[in-house]
Length: 446
Ligand code: SF4
Image 1 (cartoon, rainbow, N blue to C red):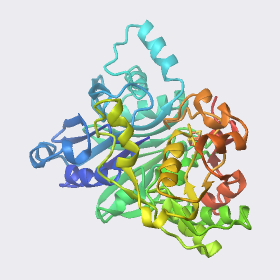
Image 2 (spheres, rainbow, N blue to C red):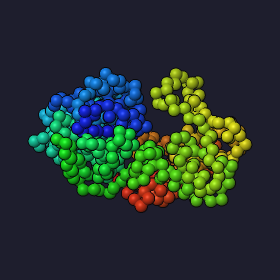
Image 3 (cartoon, protein in one colour):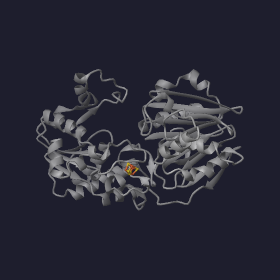
Image 4 (cartoon, helix red, strand yellow):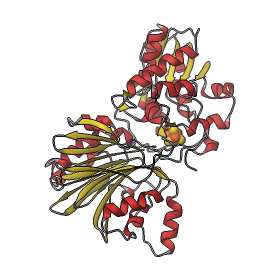
């Protein structure tokens, strides 16, 4: 996952990008960057770390252009290093270009291999760099025409932002795997991964950029182009399950309301379940648990205190320290747990190792019974479109296959997964255009 943000025609473009990237921080915590254009010249600043660690007033002052793009990174293709941090910057025959990308281009290795045979030199090991090399070899007269010509050569998932001295461009792959929203604030146009990043700066949401569509903002005007027909619309259903922020709107509804509905459907599927309390694994689990509680009349009680400061940057100096990490991130609230039969809801089961630790800590705190309810179906296939899932063999649903073996492995007394039909029903509320390959193995793009 990554988060992207772009804004045109605003004196405060870098500062607003900073605020927006801070809002998108949940989509990537490895690195962040902003590129802006002023008087026909691009400046950029990228670094490893969190948004508020990277940017300070003097860095933002050095990015004083009227248009900017920004990026927060969670690496899925290419290693976690500053060379791969985005926006990537290039100087080619079309002049200076900055690019920010969310997604995973599945034929990037093939494209880069062919380019390398013809002498191309790459500055990063990301898939994102492939498009710039393709564009720079186009015969078209300007960068944006070249981009529209070359984008159909990419396969897989991409929401792109491009910035050059003349214009800001957004483009979304023909399947629409990754989100891309258009918004407006006064005379500025905004493109971003989630509505929350536009709303935080007071912008009004206009619509999603459609699959296979590009938008170019030049001289204060926006134009739309179709570089590919919509293939099979395949939004990533994991956005609502886990990644997107609860206040973001996807398919016309907040992510929070989809999660609340999933909680209700979970209860319907587990009819007759008896427990003293229902709780969720923070943060995403809380909305599921509230929906479950409303439907079941079982009281919702938080059982974990989450330490919001123990992010990815928390250093685990050795194995012994590593053992403390689970407790450090999620500390059980003993009085809420002791002697209780608990329905515990988590968004998904991937390797199962996190659930094992969580359930163990609840049992150690005196829980009488743990009924594990998973807000999604078993994950049976890895993601190739930009989500960092492990290999097929590492997935617990593949490794252990039977539900009862999985239940025993994680140490739960009961285990229930949400059905795929109800997941689609809750996330789409009428819209069924999802990628769900990690649950059914049917990949929209090979
Ligand atoms: S495979 Fe799963 S995680 Fe990947 S895009 Fe499809 S639904 Fe999302």
